[in-house]
Image: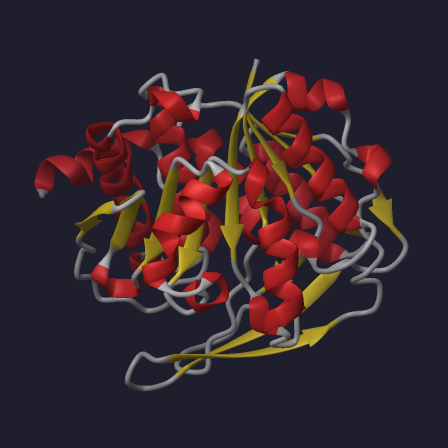
Amino acid sequence: MMDLYSIGEMLIDFIPGSEPASYIRKAGGAPANVAIAVARNGLSASMACKVGDDDFGHFLMDTLAENNVRAACPRLCEEAVTTMAFVTLAEDGERRFTFARKPGADTLLSEEEVLEADIANAAIIHAGSCSLSAQPAAAATVRALRLGHEKGKLVSFDVNYRNVMWHDDIDACTRAVRDILKYVDLLKISEEEVDMIGGESAIPALMRENGIALVVQTLGANGVRAYFGDDYFDVAGRKVKAVDATGAGDAFWGAFLAKLRICGVEKAADLTADIVREALRYGNVSGSICVQTKGAIASIPTRVQIEACMTQQ
């Protein structure tokens, strides 16, 4: 049994540089980083991915292998399937992003590459909204989420990067996300994207309509908010001297999913407020460590590191 099966085709490449105009390299975007975070917490992970035949593509595959993440579709394509993300850090610590698509960015996973056996052998199925932004990756992602739902798996989805992959087309992104919510048990969404689903006030109705067990809204430095229908609670963020937050959100969600597995939660019906609260704190610490340490992949913490930070709080 594989603990996590993560679907992702869009790689986000943060280029190394110097402060304050710092360009940070990040392997694989959300699905890869979530898979690596799960693996580093002592659980098993696999990832459906198609990467560019370039230095970054090989770097990603090496990173996955080093962290015991099995790549379900490890073959390389002729043109790089990457988006370049230039992260500029101002003197006051504010991050500014400039994105540019590279050739081949729409040459993505096909529906046939998402194997039913991989879904059947996983406990958690994870994808992000970038995977819905271009065909044929959208069909592959929908297939994976639908199969996971039909097989009773815990289905996780992360709404992100609307401004990058969707060119701020709120309507198109919203339609694509809403179409798959009926398959989703756990939804993560940032405070910048929550307007796509009607704002915070619309979350309880959205959950009832789609049978979603949990919505987690990330609140930046203020932590996270967890919704159980009409009820919600906050988990405060840790105050850190952040140089950059590259990969922090991905590491957070990966650590959260890993904690659910450590708690033995495999189905949405098993979730309780106490388990979610503990898992969110666990994930929140992960993100905080990530912003404290330069380099997203190197900073995704181990379970030992997280537990050490928990005891210090």
